[in-house]
Amino acid sequence: MKYQPVIGLEVHVQLLTDTKIFCGCSTTFGSEPNSQTCPVCLGLPGALPVLNGTVVEYAIKAGLSTNCTITPRSIFARKNYFYPDLPKGYQISQFEDPICQNGWLDITLAGQEPKRIGITRIHMEEDAGKLVHGDSGMGDGSGVDLNRACTPLLEVVSEPDLRSSDEAVAYLKQLHQIVTWLGICDGNMEEGSFRCDANVSVMPVGSKTLGTRAEIKNVNSFKFVKQAIEYEILRQIDLIEDGGTVVQETRLFDPNSGKTRSMRSKEEAHDYRYFPDPDLVPLVISDQWVERSRSELPELPGQRQQRFMTDLGLLPYDAEVLTASRALSDYFEAGVAVHDNAKAVANWVMGEITRALNDSGTSIDACPVPPERLAELLKLIDNGTISGKIAKTVFDEMWKSGKAPLTIVEEQGLVQVSDSGAIEGIIDEILAANAGQVEEYRSGKEKVFGFFVGQVMKASKGKANPALVNELLVSRLKG
Ligand code: ADP
Ligand code: MG
Ligand code: ZN
Image (tube, rainbow, N blue to C red):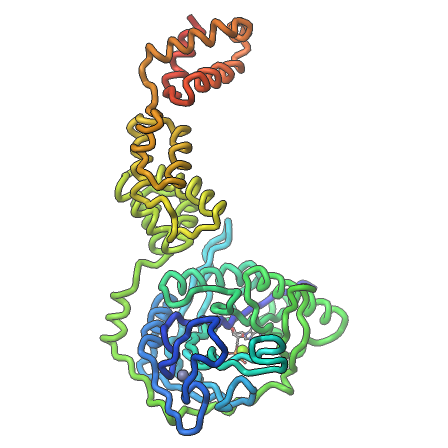
């Protein structure tokens, strides 16, 4: 029998607010354990939560950017369970009436038509604390660090619309791109700022009934999500083929073995006894509020890609690469604003700039060559002052010294030689010194032409205008 995998993702997005969702404590990562706590996030009796308005703003932005409807009156609920990192004995979350509902994202796999993935809901909730074991600055035993308790999260729940690990990763990457683009999440998956639970099931191809799913908890890289889903699909198919049945359970992915293993079955699953939190009033969001947020949204990556293609004539691939992050596409646009040759700026940003950033482990925000300077360099190429080859030398020097391109060109005497008399002089010397190759060329071995070009460029220290060298060489050799 053939099987159809079905996947739905629940993604936790940690919000980049300065303070926590229900108190004024700082959310800075990596501080002394329990140094960022107060009666509210410690869960002391009688302490009252107060909702952080920025969290609501961010949730609305996320919802509007993923085509959700914003719920006019949403409520907070208590999700009750016991765990040592949760001193209140419940997590404040949303259950019925979450802030965002019924959205979607369109994903496109290489060579395929776009596919719409439904987003069931996005809700706000607080994170729990962290248990720390062993040598953690808290003595030998185990301890609870409540710095993370009460930090704001969005949970983004997809419909079971994904049909392969590749679709799941494409969806996840797009969501990651949107929340980092909006500036509401730092997107750091290693630190857990963006993490995902993957629900996976299989059903016979053509079936209308979804199979029983397993939920793989807290996978924290795109690569692991792909591996975990693929392993889980095969495990379930093998199980069914061997006459077994998939049970609904929570599983953990082990990156070392590439396998998932059972953590708890449905029988052990929690009954959270959700109920509306009496300490928090319903959150009422007016149409005006939604419309103001909508008007404040930045141009989103998909829209910008489209504009790069239609207005600037970029190819789809280039438009996609250049909108990988907002900072990169802002850099590109700042360059085009100074030098109106989008194709050239695109090539340099995707080529030299990206290479130099990678080699030096620098992020685009800290790029030592500002976009305006890059644009000046490209102007020098386009107006014939320097060749594209010399431009690479100038670029390396700009990267190191921070000097303006024209300064470097002048200081190092790199101006392109476009004086045909001077170039002819060099050509004559080269041809005289290589009579054998001239003979070969004239007897029909036109391949040696490249040799001559190389020699002339070398003799001119790379400064001869390559187009002119070609033209003059042809006429000299023919003549
Ligand atoms: P819970 O609240 O128990 O996690 P939900 O019904 O909210 O359950 O579903 C959570 C996630 O599981 C959603 O992303 C949904 O798309 C996905 N899901 C539900 N049923 C299936 C299934 N049969 N196969 C794969 N994913 C599923
Ligand atoms: Mg779940
Ligand atoms: Zn606090």
